[in-house]
Length: 154
Length: 128
Image 1 (cartoon, helix red, strand yellow):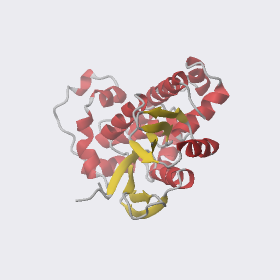
Image 2: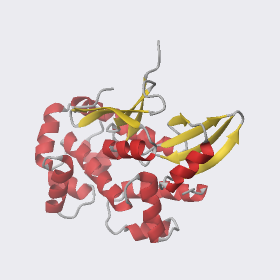
Image 3: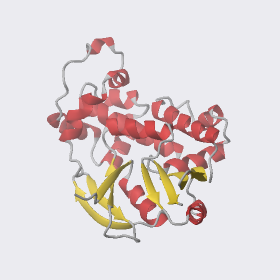
Image 4: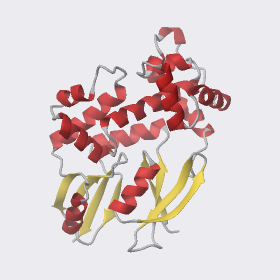
């Protein structure tokens, strides 16, 4: 498949929308409409470019955001669940456990025991939700978390 | 001093191994577990003792941001040399690979750019 410049841009935009979306109302069909590609072609082209379907990508993005929020330890599992766009705590916990290999609570305990988040951030009460908190942090804020995790050789 | 190892960040090592071996045709050289990830390298069957390419897990948020920005700006993060770019282009398209640029002569080389399905754009080039 040879993508035109405009289709490439549209798929990049769709990926951005999917990674930012915490609302189930923003369906895959809605996104396809937003970028002006038919639903069928959108799924097919997205998968061919990014290796996963739009739905799989959105789930992965939400679980990655949830992992970071849990590791920071400022939010409860329920708050993280809602902040990243899951509406059912049970479904979130099941999915998280299957994909990450341990429950959200266990992951949070383990991550918090290894993580030292620097304390020079704006007061937490200025931020209404966990997602806002995550978005406000510089990339360097996650440095200790990444160093503490078992990582591949570099 | 020699360059024997280079790396590329991938969003999923299993998916990457499939793409880089089954689709591109590289061979797995090393695979062993390191914590929750793997030390995973591939080599070209045309030069198995040559440079190894490490398929490195892109778990760092800073790395993800960099990778996404490069992709969105259409900047390839690796380049592989081929002897017949038209033939490779046809072969890879037949396997479902997505190109954003078809073989195009650019000075002393002919270039094409494709997605590796793991978050990167890869440039194929054929020297004149």
